[in-house]
Amino acid sequence: MKVQQAREKQGLKPTPISYHMVFTGNPGTGKTTVARIISKLYKELGILSTGHLVETDRSGLVAEYVGQTATKVNKVVDSALNGVLFIDEAYALVSEGGNDYGKEAVATLIKRIEDDRDKLVVIFAGYADEMETFLDTNPGFQSRINRFLNFQDFNAKELEAIFVAKCDKLDYRLTDEALEKLQVQFKQAIQHRDKSFGNGRFVRNLFEQTLERHANRIAADGNLTKETLTTITAEDIH
Image (tube, rainbow, N blue to C red; front, side, top):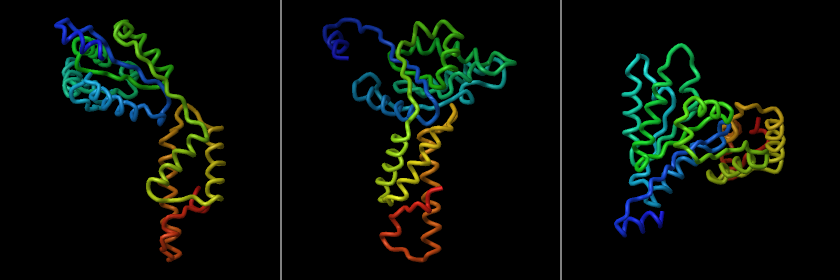
């Protein structure tokens, strides 16, 4: 970035750089969160003037009738100019048979990410294998995207850390027994997970269920002290 700014000060033409990316990984591994961070970071670095994030997927880009998809794609891209366009499950653009509307969306996207690369960053996200197949469907991707980031599944300790962080944020604390039960549950979840395992979303759902059980328990007891309001027991974790 410093070199680009120095060239501009010297009256030299800026070197064209593409910041488009591909994020691969299973659900709940932080792809959208990192996209939000990148959008803010690129604004601070002067790469993007607004740094806002626009999130979309196949439903936001592919129309129902021939000739309407390009218009739909262009409208979404225009809304993301000077910011980041995050396309979740991007492989779905070409995964459905029976029509070529998805391919029309891809062709339009490839043109726009080239024409607007000085004021737009597009992040294509999805499962690793499906994204590899998706990128092979159009040779235009290879020459326009050279930044790839793979998001690994969380291990049991990381899932535990996310849960504890959520507790800390809302002034809850776990008893030793609750923490032990939580650790066992995360280990079992890891052992039986598949590619659809929610990772961070799994933790969020478990945390919300735990708070609901906690609230029901203490409300039934009728003992609403500061300690009971903030203490999660093993009984609350299911």
